[in-house]
Amino acid sequence: MKVDQTALRFNQASIIVLLVLAFLLDAMWLVAFVAAVMLVGTLWPAAGLFKQLYARALKPAGLLKAHVIDDDPQPHLFAQGLGGIFLALSAAALWLGLPVVGWTLAGIVIALAAINLFLGFCLGCFMYYQLGRIGIKPTLPSWQGGK
Image (cartoon, rainbow, N blue to C red):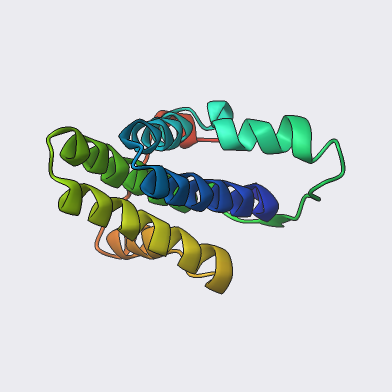
């Protein structure tokens, strides 16, 4: 299978920028929006908003260039799904009036996305592979052959 690393990096950068903006504006709705984008993109990879923006606007305009490599998209989708779950919990905590919990969960997602973007280490991917080593292979039907 093939994975466009530029699309992954754009996804990570989008998550970071939007969540930092959400924090600065104290915009709980923006956290919920990013959570929804991540969860939809996990369950239905072709519908990922950041992926669509990259593929339909930035790449055709020549602003970003594809860097496609042989890779399994499933670990990346698993990591995105975990991030989406953390952000859904973050939004819920913010809505319930628990800002320390909410912003801490969002901060964890920002930190892990930044580590992946700048250092190339994906904790969610690592977890996916470690689960596989003990016989647990998280998959969704949409992950089979879909990008």
